[in-house]
Amino acid sequence: MQPGDVHKVGVIGAGIMGSGITEVVARTGADLVFVETDDERVARGRAAIERSMARAVERGKLDPGERDEVLGRIGASTDLEDVSDADLVIEAATEDMETKLGLFRRLDDLTRPDVVLASNTSSLPIIDLAMVTKRPERVIGMHFFNPPPIMRLLELVPSIRTASDTLEFARAYGEHLGKVTVVSKDRAGFIVNFLLQPYLNSAIEMLDQGFATRDDIDNAVKLGLGHPMGPFELLDLIGLDTADHISGVLFDEFKDPLYASPTLLKRMISAGYLGRKSGRGFHDYEEG
Image 1 (cartoon, rainbow, N blue to C red):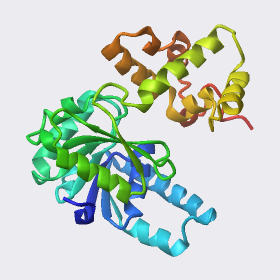
Image 2 (image 1 turned 30 degrees about the vertical axis):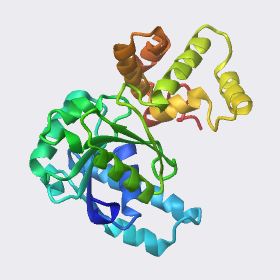
Image 3 (image 1 turned 60 degrees about the horizontal axis):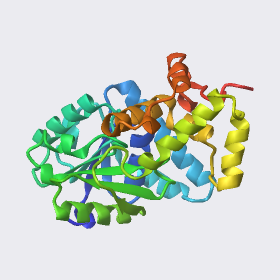
């Protein structure tokens, strides 16, 4: 299959990542349906897509007519069977292995045997997802970055059972979406999170030990290292619970203390301070 053969795409999940992936795919001209678990989440996903595209219009990146055409190509459903005729399925559900395994079993039964089943997981093993299907050679990781309409990187993660033509299709499709693709082995964290998580954990430990203040650490990284965001701004964007989950997956695989979640991170999660999505994390987004 070539990118031009993909006329309908199914996206599973319409949270921060799923809604962004939906927008990226629909802007290339493909029809698309995203699936969520209930009508409330469907409405939230559609609203997120509309807000994102409104910002693109305001910035002059998209004209209103094109926005309306793109929105017209996006369908929504609470029934997984509505992706049964898709030419490609991208799973972007919650970062929980049992949830993803259940979805891949269902998708394997619902879709054509030649359809590629991709996962947007940021850290979980692709081989585990592949082996609950009857098509492990057609399963691959396609890890987008937040926010997908803006971030150009796409990590491709073939398992040891992924066919070479599946990887080449994923690479070509990523380029079709306007992304720069990189390929990682199927190990926890892939490229980016394997490097990122020890840095974030170290920043949290520095803060907890009183080595420097939150703002001084953020500013030092932005101005001294040239990062667009400081570690605490980035943690709040990622979600503290997501960062903790990624740390757990990495620590389970490598048993390196660098990947162990800091105590402060766990205490903040227990307090409900999850970052931007909860209104408060290392920064307070409810002020003013």
